[in-house]
Image (cartoon, rainbow, N blue to C red; front, side, top):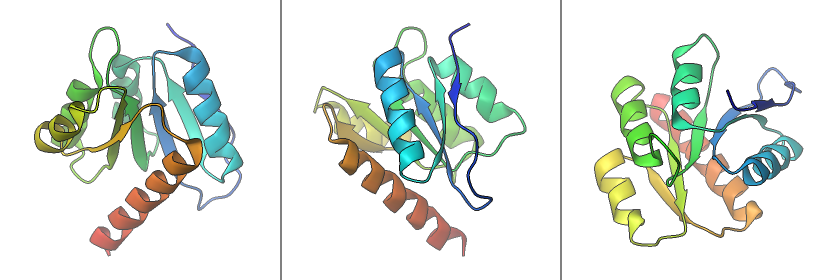
Length: 137
């Protein structure tokens, strides 16, 4: 089983982001940056681990996932999330720009092209969480 990276919650109203990426360094850096920006971040090395985590008792506000991973890819993860948690925002990232339409059409997910600036990632995550709050209000 791959290592799970999690940082303790700082505040009760803090939003939780699940970061799914098979690249340890990328996952760890993004988790740390999100934590530095006020999020609670949990890192998972595979879609399978993410599905198990999402099926458990914890709360997640958004999933940020790489598309190309061994085993279940990010598209399949996003479809699974959409089927089981239709209100959950999902952002998929890939170095292949042609994947953007697939993310929106097949998975109801947003798309970011890699490499992406970490500030842009943080901004997109904040925007997606705010849109979810507005829809739920």
